Image (cartoon, rainbow, N blue to C red; front, side):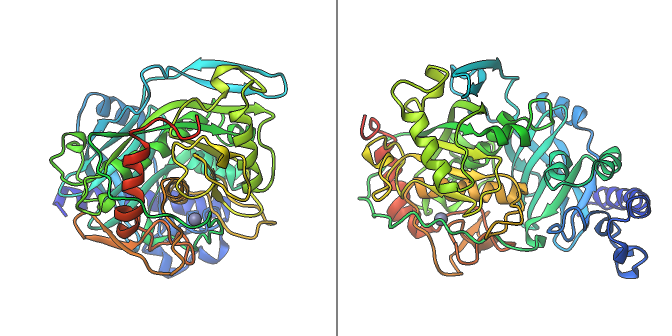
Length: 476
Ligand SMILES: [Zn+2]
């Protein structure tokens, strides 16, 4: 690590020391941790443990988001905190490039009032989704606006996330007083995935996956997407917050684009801005897909309303496929996009996510309306922490959100469930290895890598994408 980084790290540690001590006494979040000699080495630990239980060694920071946004918009290299495994952070230099995934005619988000049968739209601010390189090796993807930084850096030191404290604290029902105290001093949390506690067990096997012939794409594949959501999503990520619903949808889809587009060869003009080493294409078949966002929508009233993910998904399909829309006219429909992803602000009872069958990408046929022979381009993901009544645990941090959305879209794109605990994958030229995204027995954990199983990609996913994304939708 360069000297300047170390110095900066020490300075920031001293600063956080004071903040953490103050917090500990003010808030008494975790009396056990106060004055514990072991934790004095890493005082951030005490400040966060109670409100953020799965972030064992995370660090709270205050980022000057306005200045970062100005710099990144000017194309300058910026410095962002990276969390090391076991605790501690250092600033890493990151060169980010705007990754505008919006379709040419996507200029507004849509609010669907299901009760009134009407819809309104409001202009979107300019895109703020970026991808790029970490200096000295590594890949990055971030949303960066005047008030928020959300995303991750993948380097040989691990996979480090930055996410805003608001709405994280609010969605965990941290008391308003404690939230106010924390947000006065900090605005983001930084953590390494390897340090995350707990794991998310999935119970979402959508059925077998059929291998597809070895069709090779003739050109760049485009995976077009509709992002939808329920009124609970809008409540979780309101328009006046640092992370409004449409920005949350766009941020998660930027990570999906990072996964599907950031492949070898590095010199590829379509990802020359990044430092990839991603096995998505199995290292051989040159399968690659970019995300194009067609719509960013949410229901303000009405819409899917079940406490079960599978039923909410079924409702979402029915509502978006009705020939004469129950509300809002044209923007309400699924259009002709390859995928529709429903982002929910509900803590479901049955499972955190679901895809309507395996391999349903760009399929609008009868399988969208069958519960026994599911085959459709829709999936659903929960974004918020589960409540006490659920039969699984989902913390709703950005790592879990991103892993879940990509797991369900993986099913859409013909990835089968992996029932063993081990499906080894590596990113960044084999320097970062762990378990693949489709592993369901162990679920998402500190060992998860942001990759699909290579064999599934080569035999199931890549060829189906090549076939479906170069022909008209099935069933139209
Ligand atoms: Zn699954």
